[in-house]
Image 1: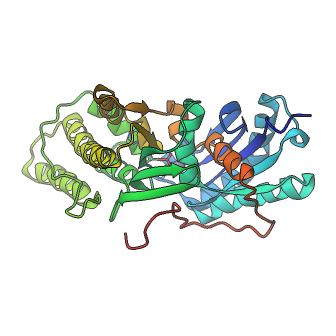
Image 2: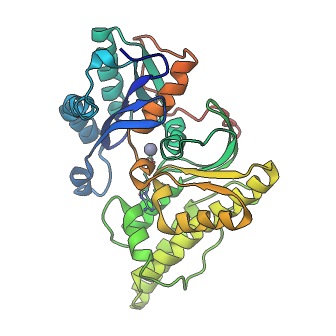
Image 3: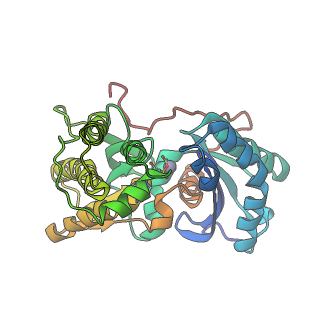
Length: 342
Ligand code: KG4
Ligand code: ZN
């Protein structure tokens, strides 16, 4: 038996194209972290096909869960609670994880915890930085969300600005497609950008009210590429990638810096898949020159994983925030504290 100081949470994540299960101790310590990516299947179609994603989750989720328990050297009976992503994400994909988690809880009598995927991404920082505690500033950069967030507590956030159209990860994926790069585009642009020069200038992604807009940047890149094609001019893709990457990231850094200075907080963190971007990480590191503590989750915890869900689940467990077996998927779930007028 484990003492109450050792809370073990089994996390389950299936919101998009990764089937993931992990076991985390006390919200901070990774005991296992299994991620099965479906990228190779979706690559054939140039993006995630929701129906295929759901079917693949169904096929592998039990195997992934057994491996996660096995890697942690634990049985389900030794787990304190099951935490599962119930939104945001693809409804069919989410339902696989939610149904599986409910089945586990029904069979074992363990409590069920419904985790917001975006809150999970923020918690990836607790797994990398054991002593990190709120309040701190966090740049949220995923395929579906882009925001500067003041993390007031483990369950309280103030969303200070966010995107008015596309998310930053979405822009990376769309621009990659324009450049003929395979899915997922973010890592491809990141790699290509490191070989190019930032010789094209695009408008900032920061709009007049301090929010972000990525659709204009995407259109500007498309126009650049198509105009060059029509004129028969050769365009160096690496230069386009580098210029786009810089513009996509610089606006985020500018707004994070402004809000951080205003907040008086001394710690900045990043959350979400685009947090793996090399240029973004270098720009964030620069905050250290001004005396800030910078948290960059390890690369395997930036993208979708279940360890971050288990970490979030731990803090909900401590608050007694449990769900019953009527839990449903919520594809459009927002971060608590997000303002509806944005
Ligand atoms: O957080 P995430 O794994 O899933 C969502 O919750 O959306 O983010 C996925 C996004 C994709 O758009 C992907 O292209 C982008 O993160 N991404 C990157 C990099 N790695 C993943 N974008 C830029 N540079 C990267 N290295
Ligand atoms: Zn995600």
